[in-house]
Image 1 (cartoon, rainbow, N blue to C red):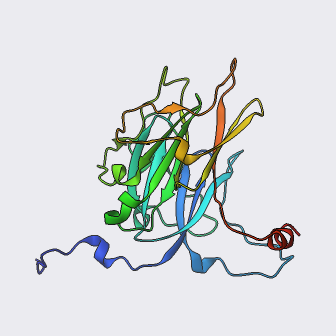
Image 2 (image 1 turned 120 degrees about the vertical axis):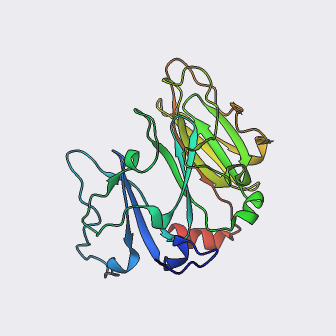
Length: 240
């Protein structure tokens, strides 16, 4: 028998704390309190951040608050949402837990991007995200299109052609002032302004062509390039 308090949820008991989120290539994930990583002097040996097996290696590492929403975009074009505190907690040397045991991801599908969003959902309409696929297509949406995500996920992007051949490569927050760069397996790259891609209102759209691919070439990475004002002297000093 417990006393009932209306409007009280489990999240209200979670302390706000900065966590280091680590994800490996084979799909293992964990969160570790930032306090476990102490600052070191230059030239120090460093600390082990995660135990990996065989040829597994860390691909993603970022700091997020326990109450920060995380958007998981998969290679098959789906999106899932979890708060940081729902991730498995582990020490610095822990391997973590397989993402397939946390999210209802289909067999053969992996995580293309993980996006922490520190803004409240009421402000997500002010943010934009850019998508890129292995087939060279890109699409820009408002982040608010992915605010209401159910437990079983939500379609984030429709992939053109055969899903076994085309996959989602990356998803990143961008603005009208940013540039987008796509790189391919053949060593080719293209850079264009994000504003060259119109804002789509549909999640089921395949987007527009971002780069023309030849033969069996595929896009392997997408980067968002930020702009900032700097004088020639400041630029020289920075490059030094």
